[in-house]
Length: 115
Length: 113
Image (cartoon, rainbow over all chains, first blue to last red; front, side, top):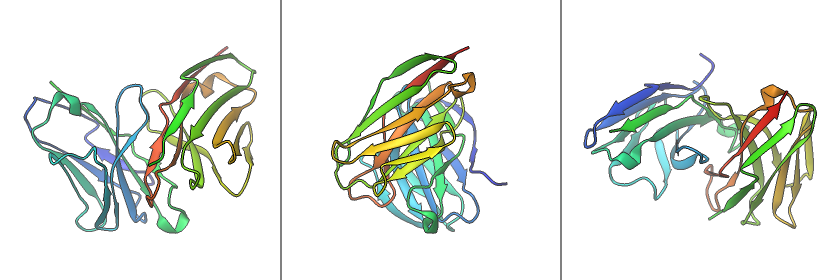
């Protein structure tokens, strides 16, 4: 596998339910990022990890959102008590720090619909 | 933090014509400017980037120019083809961040055969 994998591709959930998304980065990449994209907008930064350490979180990331990267490999993004405003495409990206801070490779995303 | 403005929001050109998309940024310390292409239903893909120590970079039919004084950078696509039709996003580093990009709102490019 040479790309960033995200699972699931689509998720429909009822308001108030919890959801969890998974991202598997390119294996040698030590940085992993989560972005959110709504229709007609560019990706918005949520958080990023360097290895297993979460180094930065956006103000967009409310207390209902939590992200982990327990072994410095795959990452999960959990949204608790989902709201309709959480409906968006959640994109994961990874990069290799030694190749530059911003050389992202994005995954195909998880599209969340909250009904 | 950084603020990125992108224009136009939509652009329609005839096949073979050139297309230009412009972005402005606010943080004079920004030093890296990528462009991403996103086809419908697909992931954003990096197509070209430029660092602040150069004024222009080319890759076949695609070029990016940077004007640090005016704080703007532009994507130029020559000899457009229908497969160039997509949404294009510019981005710049968020001030003080070590990896966080701020994206423009995107330009939907349509290339008519």
